Amino acid sequence: MSLLFVILTSAYAYPATNEECQKLLLSILITSPAVVVFDNLSSDLLAHNTMCSVLTQEKITGRILGISKVATVGTQVLFLSSGNNVGPVQDMNRRVVTISLDPRIETPATKVYAGNPVRTVKSRREYYVQLILTIELAYIAAGRPQTQCKPLNGYEEWTSFVRQPLLWLGLRDPASRLFKQLEEDPGKDVLGRVLVAWLGEFGSVPKMIRDVCQRTDSSQYNHNRELREVLMEVCEEQKDINRRKLGTWISRNEGRIVGGLRFQRGDGHTAAQQWCVKSVKSVKSVANASFEMQVNEEILSNSDDSSDVKFNEDRIF
Image (cartoon, rainbow, N blue to C red; front, top):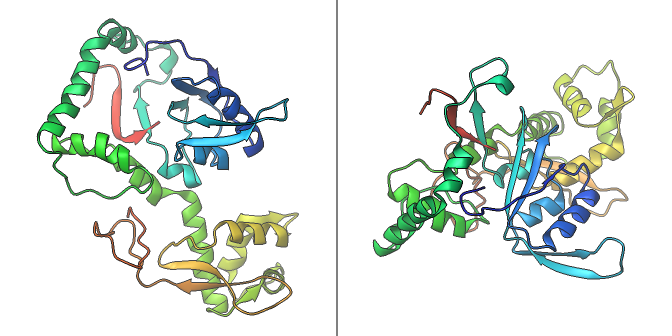
């Protein structure tokens, strides 16, 4: 943070809802800050729609709190966050690069450090900026050679100006942890279990939510116990499966591919929406994804040690 911007920044609490997130971000971004910090997170980085848009789009538009006026603001801001044992979830997994620090001590707050990185960078800011610019200019002078790497859709410029120069130097891909996050997403694991259990129970026959709940809502249901258990995980309410919650959850995950399966809307003209699980044969697992883009195919990509702090390059925050 201090490397490029020697400024004072204000810290904010991470918003709990999307409505709160929209109001907060618009009020912050309208002042054109260089850095926005969400400090001391007590929960994971939730994938609010507005936050996801801010991290992928150049501008957002919204109504200014307190007045009937719509404003469009830029999003070229460095977003930082910190917290203990928290991380990005759902769609934030592909938008956040995480770092984890292991102090190797039971009470980190009492640890005595040998140096002060922030003070060091501030005192020699020009030197460190020069090093960064030297890497970029050298990469451009070399003809911007391309190193084979996994694509990160939506962040092509970041790949061109950050990932590629570092890969050219033989350094580790800074997006490596991000791809690992995509593979380890807990939401993906639950969705995968639902898809497999649903397919095992109903095949590819479209079913209404009502029919699914009637088939699985009995505590005596034993035919496909995994389906009931995982649906209870997703939408349990008062020890039963809540139809509205299940319908909303499936709609939110429509088309998302896990293990070569995905939810699709059923054909036909029924009073209520029908859902079915379909196999998508062209999809490759995140771990074995090809680097080559294939036309009309959907490919899911993913798949130092100091005396003071052990830095794990696999994580980012």
